Image (cartoon, rainbow, N blue to C red; front, side, top):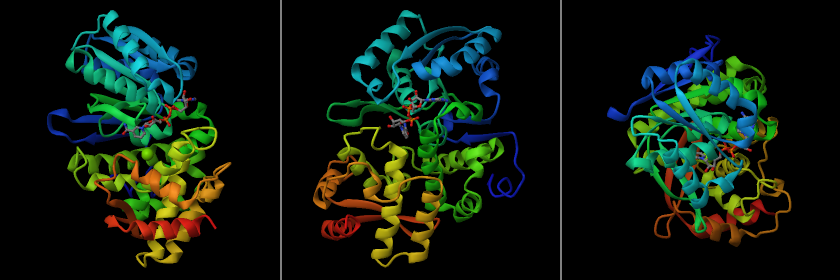
Length: 380
Ligand code: NAD
Ligand code: MG
């Protein structure tokens, strides 16, 4: 286990997390200065390949020149495809355009698609890679904390339909992931916090010592690159371990949805309006709710739930439904939104609950009335 040696002061400038999936195994390299060295890493796995870099306008402005120069220096031909920033780019129309642009750039099966950006770019470019020529190789260069700790691990790619989020997609593993903490320097604080909620999640679901480490100095990860490298590595390792055991979400992978059954409902009811709520904020409130719901069901000590809440609040994350600006919906509306989640199986509500910090478990067939009662109290 990488952790806890690192967390106890043995911080390193670079970490490598191997995602073990047989013939589809790959490395996640976590460190600084990786954007500048991207060309060398890519040339190593695909010497002389042509690359199609897919990115969004914000990331293009801030980090694309570094990556383009690096590919050029490594003797790789690169074409760049830029999409508008934001969730709206995970659409069929943008997907179609990007596929055509990739084909126009004569990217062959042995060439590479490079996703440079946050989770939106990663999901879109990954799905383009999964489908162009029935599957092309791709490299992820995630530039948000959320994409470094979450969306770049596990191989889920996809776009949204008017029927819901991520409903069109494929499992397609990257050949390599380069997570450069330098890119986090330009990330707006609110986006950083949102990604941090997912970092906290990994501690809460299975690693109490990791949570302790985060909780001992909650500012550290926000300010120190060494701590960021550690936090990203531990997060990726936790997700990679779970994904390796359950690649297609038949069981254990559901633990990664901790805070998400509630969180997705809040996102749905705010119309995915990022001005009101971004995903990580929904997850933060969702995790606090799941902890309190666990206490209410007599599963978890109240002190643990309070600690979760205090930690999230301490870094500026929301923990209550009423923290969402302009919230008006009632408990029934939240319950209905939960039923619309694609992860709800045939009417039964599944929650990830806590027995304590670092001890999450899958609670199947939770009684809807119990959830309703809980939500009513949450809204008081
Ligand atoms: P995002 O990609 O929209 O990025 C957030 C914002 O930050 C955007 O405006 C972007 O332009 C900007 N940005 C990106 N990198 C930046 C940088 N280094 N400096 C400054 N600005 C930068 O959002 P996200 O939070 O990274 O990802 C959210 C998406 O990820 C959602 O679509 C979600 O469904 C998906 N996701 C996928 C998985 C998966 O397993 N595939 C997991 C979690 C989330
Ligand atoms: Mg999430």
